[in-house]
Length: 122
Image (cartoon, rainbow, N blue to C red):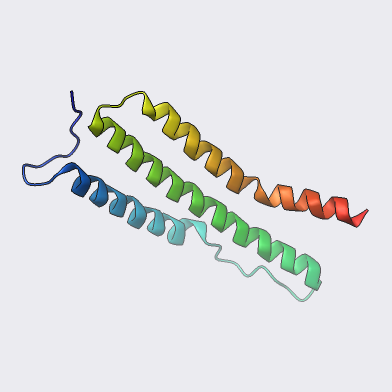
């Protein structure tokens, strides 16, 4: 039994998933550029080079982290739709776990590097 989503007579499943992937990518880009990027200037004359660099770095890291979240969510939806179209309902949990672990690794990367930096300073 197949689970057909948004299927027209002339489109095959791969074309549908490709179109959905494009829509997710475009939507993610719009969300990132309209709501994710900071509108304020982060550096001031009072900032030292280290603190100013860290605050700018953390703001850039936020953008990268949220961008990767939306990109991974889009790919997860694409893979889930592919598995549903193939009739493999048990793969949904595996797909969610795989992309969840991927995002957890990306999101915790800065904490990991800060931990290493803190250990090397002692």
